[in-house]
Image 1 (cartoon, rainbow, N blue to C red):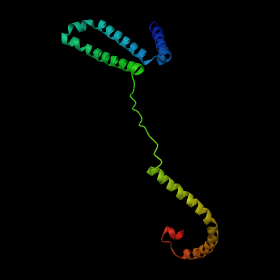
Image 2 (image 1 turned 30 degrees about the vertical axis):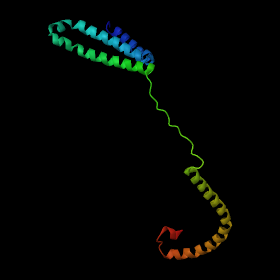
Image 3 (image 1 turned 90 degrees about the vertical axis):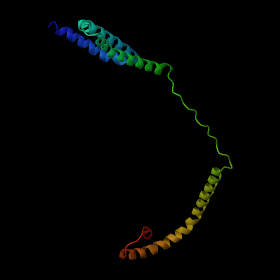
Image 4 (image 1 turned 45 degrees about the horizontal axis):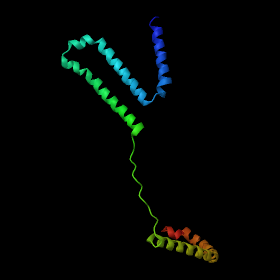
Length: 163
């Protein structure tokens, strides 16, 4: 019982820290806390296994610092990147090209005038042809009825014959 309650309290405190404090921490604070905990862990580990480290040769003593040096270098790089991003980091933006409007005598304007004239003339011709088309439609309906009877007997050879 004496080991259960302290372990349970530590577990509840760890959950509270994880869900209440950790999400509100900035990346810089999280990096500093992780550096602190890593330093504490390395110190405790070295204190606990000091006799084993003394018994090894001097080269083996240097090997134990390699992970700490690499982790320290990576953390320093990450902290520098975070600081550079949030303080003085900037992205170069190229200047937009200057776009000028075409002159009145340019080829584009002359083509557009021609297209507009053609469209306007087609609208006028369409209105004139409506009356003529009404009479032709009545004649064509009579012819179509005759052709439908003929088309039932023969197979169509193209799309245009059906139209």
